[in-house]
Length: 281
Image 1 (cartoon, one colour):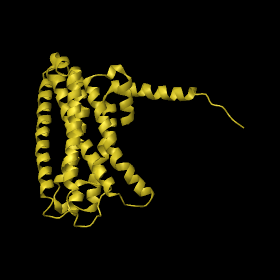
Image 2 (spheres, rainbow, N blue to C red):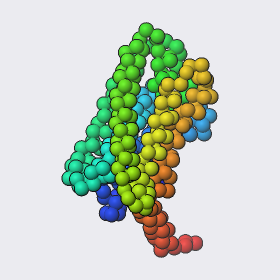
Image 3 (cartoon, one colour):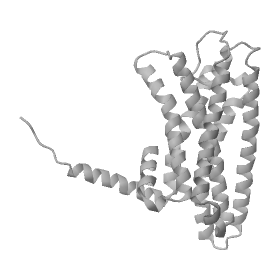
Image 4 (cartoon, rainbow, N blue to C red):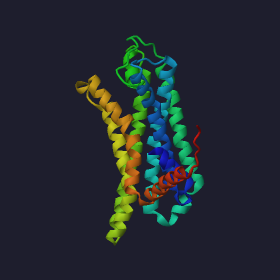
């Protein structure tokens, strides 16, 4: 699904707009995050093993933190894009020009890489005093911190708290943007106009809600309800479900994207049927 969205946006010049540019980056991040965790888990399941090398675990943590952090920043920028498009439509082309969009996307990717470097360096410099068995299907920071000495992980815990507080700030910005958006929507006189405007925001709002609710519940749940099976379920919810569901959310509510994807699939099928082949005795 993410691959189809990437191909459709890249190949159709009608989709070369700020909204679809951010969607292309979102699909890249989703593809990266789900490719970081699921293939290794599937390989371990097929070969009936649960091992991963130390370097492989560090790489997995780095990649996953980078993609998830960048996605959070990108969702914030997408909220700003919708705010400008609906609340300041006459200035949209000036504010959201190509250079601004590229700078926003670069900032999201850069923030993800920087956060990943700091988290990975902090976590893997801690001595692991509680063994080397993780109760998870991928290398997850909270699980790694459980293995470290209790007096050594305070610096990483402090950095996580700092990231959480900054994340709250971006969450407040997203909420403020949508409050302004819905106020502007209510001022649109026609019902059809209101419906069309809201339909451009609903996919993004659904993705933000799904992404933030699963991540926040995973990391803020009370320790009393924590268990290996619940932790595994929550990890699947925030690491696998959003990247897999995001293409469906956007394609269901976006007629323009659906038409392009449909043409792309039909074109691939038609091309495959026209390919010549020969039989050899």
